[in-house]
Length: 364
Ligand code: UD1
Ligand code: UDP
Image (cartoon, rainbow, N blue to C red):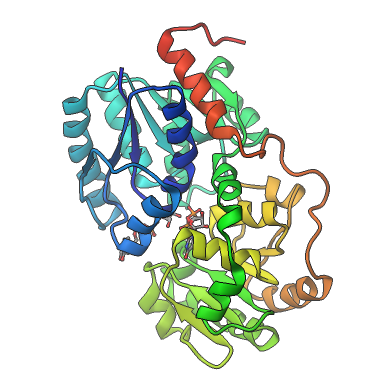
């Protein structure tokens, strides 16, 4: 039976690549459906190239829109393509609208599903991703958890523990595989950055969709740029609003297009500090030991705080927190790295999927 991976957004590609590779090694027939949620070359094509992902079987081209419009287009497009390919199993990743739509379509068609990155919770239902996580986990037949606290979250929501597998983090597989190709110096030179610099990313609706929040944030980032030159590879979401709030290239602040995966990680690896509201970047900085300040009130990835370099900050706290992080220098992760973030989560997931496809009893 065919395994279909439904992917739509930048972080999906990074999480799926190791699973696709793992299944290929086991000769499991598979294909990718790209929903087209992300469509700019720098948000999509560059990841397929950098991660060595195979060409999708189809790109649904759903594009952008309100949550309702985008989700409706996803549902309609996915139903058709799933019926056409008649998969034995559909694998979804993370917490984006493409993930939600795919799990819903498959649940209604009676097609089994697996969710990679199950059980993360910010407990903040104002976050669109939190809604997607809860719904996705309630419908998935196989759930792959990246960190141990996910197991108790899922148990509390009534998910049968027999369906849940703690496998570590495939995003870390992609990072580890990329390490030999990272070249901070080359990217830094290309961008005209000095040796000591900070990297910023911003795209959460709570930060960039509201003019007041955006202004507060941009003021705080500008203050950091007085301490250390800052480069911001900017996600297209909220670009205009952030520019209107003053996030524009200046002497010590450089606002650029999103970077490809290898270029971005190169830059992060060489950075003195990262300021972000991304989910994945909290994990990557933890792994690389680069200090990370997260501009959010909560995180679904607390393990990056307890086992890593991440701190949550308000915009008001950012300048002082940056000063301290820069003075403390390269962060030694506070103890052991998260369990099973060892670079072989993809093969681990692939083995469980292959066993499930064979009909093996997976109960512990
Ligand atoms: C989505 C995910 C978010 C994830 C992020 C990763 C949802 C609800 N959110 O947010 O969890 O962190 O992807 O990057 O699924 N746009 C472009 N070009 C593109 C894609 C988007 O210009 O290739 C612009 C459009 O103006 C669009 C906006 O970005 O309206 C938002 O895109 P969308 O996919 O709806 O959500 P993201 O903010 O990217
Ligand atoms: N990323 C990238 N280029 C950029 C910014 C981010 O390649 O300019 C990568 C980053 O390394 C990580 C992923 O994109 O692997 C995270 O995606 P994003 O922050 O968009 O989404 P989130 O993780 O918040 O859902």
